[in-house]
Image (tube, rainbow, N blue to C red; front, side, top):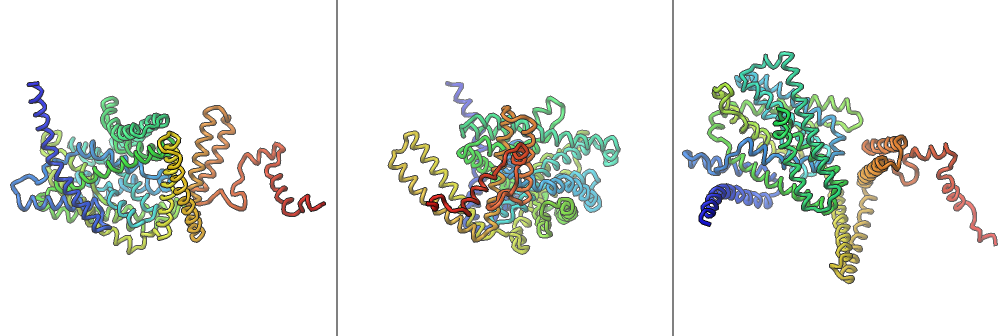
Length: 604
């Protein structure tokens, strides 16, 4: 016992300072939350950043001899290994894969081609304007240009911005984060080796770099798919929401760590942990949520992910503000003022032409309007990823010499990030209103309210049935529940029917969404039948092809379900007729006879 007490005291003394440092952050965050709740229409994450900046400024002015008021060091590893995985995973898991697929062309063009072109443009301009070597200017561009959708998407949801605009912003950010990290590591490696851009432009080196970027990106994608499928396979045969929550967080952190660190020891180089985490999140948040989670599990997992993302955002934004090097911002203010318009111009130089090209090539999707392009440029906020990357810069190069541009790059990234989050983030609402893009109507809000309540009522009735079957509530209580909820459900259905009859566009959207989900279930059942040998490969492939045709028509906005006539004639009907079986003729004949001939009773 005599030896255990000192060990316990030593452990406590190590934990206590961390808790003492964390407590003020969350006290401030609680105050910010109360302020936002009272004010309304104010992005929570931007309010946190402003509070952190205020702490940093107060500390710099009142206690210049102190390092900072909040004594928590925000490091590259802390952001990348602890904070980013749940943020990336939650953002991907809550992204509708079907919506992303419909907009994949412009999203990939903006996130991959657009980011690479913007990095080159900003690097070339930065060499002339900042006076940096070209490779250092490219390094700055690769750090600052990846976008952060957290703040702007929260505002989009509050204002009711169109679904497609949200998908474009979120999809681009999820993908360009991974591309930006790969570019950053490439340029940083060349800087640390003392190389020049001329070395990078040599055909052999350019081919090697392109191959490395491809392998790192595709490898991260494969890791995310494989690990996502493994966890999905376990969850399919499991019905324990607490265990499935644990598996989800293991997947969020595990996909990142396996790609970045575990495989690095095996194959000698790392893969993209960002891309691995995003792909795993997309997989488990879409296919996993649809086929491997019960309603209770789905609610528990997504609530847990939302809570984790909220806590991480709370910590990261207020800490970014509190650890902003105010003295460095003041010392390099001229560079920051030059960098802000250049970053915006580089983004505009790729968003407008790439969007125009995407409109011409992708004729099946609606055009990206000029208003959308304005918002994509101004809404390209730069937050956690750029801060994490700049914190990964070395003070000393591999040669042993100090990195000459360390302070300048750190100040510029923090300064541009602060401007984009505060100024651009706070003005997004006005821009949306001025462009007339916030288009959620009162009828759409009422429809969502009614639909949400209807689902809650269904879940309540199912829960009452389960509790009654388990003997946990008596018959009379169960009858009271089902009667009350039954009356409410009938009223909800009646209200929904009248709302959709008055607003046909709501009914059509509901029809297309429901039809898409039904067809996906149909496709899954066919695949199971083929795997189990119930249906042969040839007819199975033909049936799957037909379902895919229907899905394509639904995705393009054309329903295959009509009230008065056959919206789509299935392949089996044609084959049955070729076989000599008249499909649907008897029913049609009976209908004709029933309307045109008198009943037999009239003969007498």
